[in-house]
Length: 250
Image (cartoon, rainbow, N blue to C red):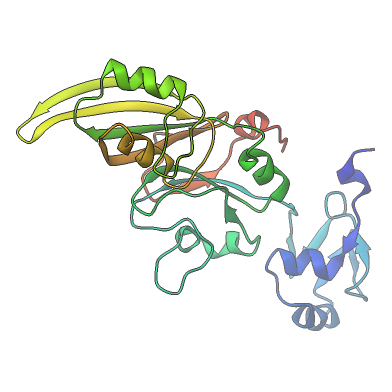
């Protein structure tokens, strides 16, 4: 039998987790006879149900339970990768209230001024797998660099570079996409894949070779790739195919 087939939870826990009210509020709804399980009116809000198999209705509306949510966000600059902050706008402020009941959090961080792919979920196990230093999950960025990124830079990155604190990075794959000559000097557009996630790592790697990142966007994390049709600041749930790439199944 699958895990879903074995799952039993308190009814009030299922409904409160999905945002249908506190346990005290749900107790009042039960008293009104407004909650049914498999067609029968509920008398005890603490009864155990299988939320995946039982038909649960509240106020005549059937609920569709799920434990986890997985959201792809095209993070805009100016928003921080946190669940709360007293001064700054966070990525959770971009979400509809219906998703907040699941208490999602960002998997890893993007700098405030960095845009691109950010996964939001409440699946702690998946987050650990993607962030564990032992896993070396690759992350790919596109960036604009002030100055001309040279073949020597590409070679240095492929060996690992020494950051300002003495840390030597793992080998990274640097590709020069184009170099444009501008009035204030050359601008290099690059793609970079790293296999760890040190603080401000991409910016510090380029600083180590005397160059500055002026635009940074994450386009890939592990097998998950940013949907380029997703407008900046927007989000959507992962598709079944994307969940499968992460080892998850709907």
